[in-house]
Length: 68
Image (tube, rainbow, N blue to C red):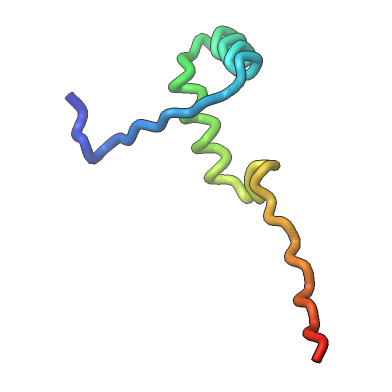
């Protein structure tokens, strides 16, 4: 039994289409979904990428000046 402090579990929801494509990619590499997701996360977090497309920070508008 693994040490409870050595691993964490994460539950993720995604579309049926993404799950299908993930399964196809896993079959291509003879890997489990677990293996592929961990590999993708490790590579993304160790790179100089700015993060996922959906996590880009919106620009903040300039503060409005008060009238008065």
